Image (cartoon, rainbow, N blue to C red; front, top):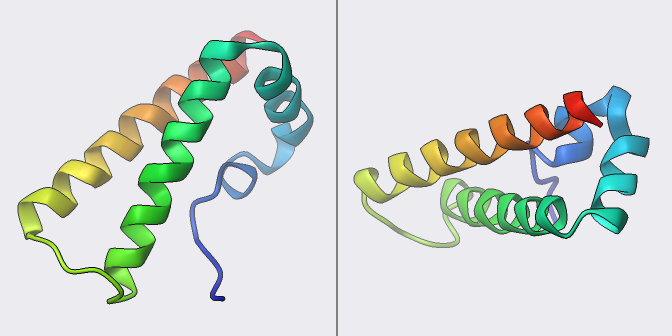
Length: 79
């Protein structure tokens, strides 16, 4: 299996403890993290050629990942 880029621990390497704590203790954060993981994996499958899609859908996925990452970052900053 190939490396999936943009995983949360890779995006926030200095905040892995906060990531874990929030996933365990904050249901909203856990849902955001799960959604980010799902979207990120879908992007990776498309970029790897495993799945095909339209350019518009791919752009929408990347925007969604960016919005989720921003929200996660905000929550990490406040934790």
